Amino acid sequence: MGAVRAKRFLTGLMALSAAALGWSLAASPALSDQTGSASGLPVPRYVSLKSDRVNLHEGPSKDHRTIWVFLRAGLPVEITAEFEIWRKVRDSEGTEGWVLHSLLSGRRTALVTPWKKGVDSTLYDKPSTQSATAAILQPNVIANVRSCDGAWCRVWGDGFKGYIQQSNLWGVYPNEKIE
Image (tube, rainbow, N blue to C red; front, side, top):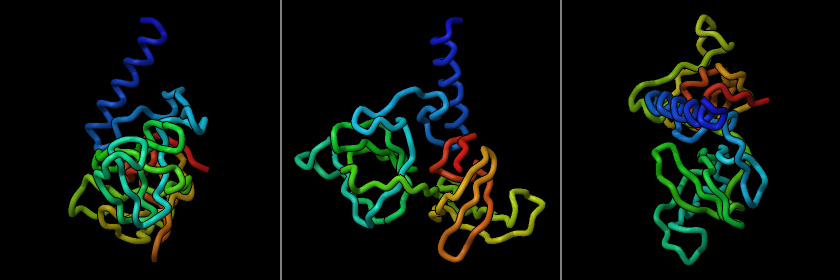
């Protein structure tokens, strides 16, 4: 199997595995060698919303119809494409559209288990399930990501801080390391 075919096969296999676990279907940055045409940054990548009111457009201009309005500052979104000052984004539910780049922040945030409605997640004092419980977080809580080692992320938010298993977050890629 050629190198390109092997990479496509592995990317597809990881996408299927990620889908089964409720993660984003986009390729992991480790497997993607694409960069944004406008920013030069990796695509796809996660960012967060700067404002508590962000219009999601059908296409990359204000002339395109607004298809959704995000009302939650700090919400993580995944940039999947770039066109001049516009970024195509996807949210945790798969909704896609275009937003102005000035409404996005490089600050990393993540949603706690948005795919597990009604099932809380444990935040630990240390990166171990044997550690003391720091908090219990409900699905869709926004957590600020301080660091990730590929298995655990150190997060904080309004009234909580600690470690959560990386697989319980939407807004970081599987095995992604953040310092």
